[in-house]
Structure formats: structure tokens, C-alpha cells
Image 1 (cartoon, helix red, strand yellow):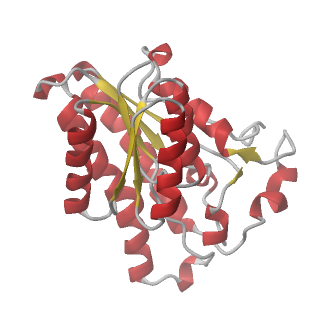
Image 2 (tube, rainbow, N blue to C red):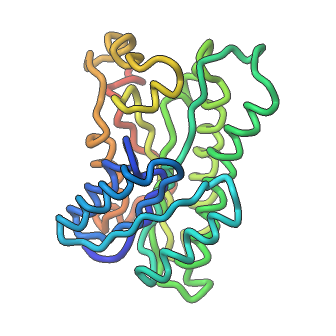
Length: 251
């Protein structure tokens, strides 16, 4: 494989695992982060040890000007992008809908939904044959919460991921003839630091017995799905979603 992939929110968790897996597959990586510069630098170092080029760019995807600057920096570092992994997102402390403020809801939706749209927009401008590009791949990281609703925990997060699912289907049909494939990934109960952001670091252990496979998943298992969707092996796949979730939806 060759080319560069921008992975948003890739200083930790699924983003970092995806960046490292794609580097092992031969891609150069633009590591995006918003807070933890040290963690982002560590991911860059690991990618370089694998023999691939990498850079870390700080940008908050909820801010349009920062998204534009992020992609311009990737242009300078790598030239044309082969792929975008739309992974950046936030999870706020568990709360019932009746307790949520407009500020909380808007903050979450701006990052998780608007941020995904803005990054997809900038990727399309560069990849689309309509704009002189040579095609490319977008992978949107959604969540099992989009189907489950996350009642009593974070319905706002679940709703944001439902919007990401609609972005995947709609954008896929919009740009398929322009050489861009758009797909999604629905992680289930995955061991990442994000659960601590929601106020329950051990959430996966509490819920894993509800799954047919009786265990939580790992970021590397989600990254494997991302890597297949980015690769040419999925060249006839667009507008679909993969479900690394331990059988969550099995009746």
C-alpha cells in the first residue's frame, strides 16, 4: 500500500490503533490531536519506527478554520491524501436527557457531527475527480450507540453517531462516481480511555456479559476493520458499515 491517510483524534484509543495499523500496512499518517501533544508525538514516533512518514497536527475538528489548517498542513507534508479516517469525537459524562443543557448538546454535536462533515468536506475537495483529484477513501467511525440509543447514559452521543451513519450513506452515493468510497465502522464495547470521559472507566466489564462473545473488544480489532476499508481489497465497497462488536446485534 502507499499514500497518506489523515486520522483524526489519533493520539489515543481507536484513532491511535488505526494510525499504527495503517502505518504497518504501508501508509504515511497525519496524526491529529487536540489536547495531548505528548501522546500524539509518541504515535508519530512509533509510525516512524515502522518506516513510514508521519506528522502530528493539533486541530479541534469542531472549528472550521482549524480543520482547514489541518488539511493544508497535511497537503504540505504529504501532497495528495489517499484516505481520511473520521475518528475524532467526544463523550460527556453520563446523564439523562431531561438533565442535558443546550450547551452540552451543542458542544457534543458540533464536535461529533459538524467536525465529521467538515473533515469529509475537505477530503472530498482533495480526492474527488471532479476537483482534479485521483480518488480516495473516507472511513467514518460511528458507534453501536447509534443503534442502541444509550438510554440513561448518553443519548446525545448516540444521536451524534446516528448522524454520522447518515453522513456515510449520503456522502457515499454523492461521490462514488468521483472515485471516493465512503464507509463506516460501528465499534461495540471496546476497551478505550473514552469510557472514563463518560464517567465509568469499567463500563465494558459491566456490559460484556450481554454480548454473544462474552468479552469486550480491543482498539486493534476495530483498526483491522478500518484498515480493510482503507485498502484496495474493499475496492467495490461503499456506503456500508462494518460491525466489530462481539455479536451485539445477533438475535
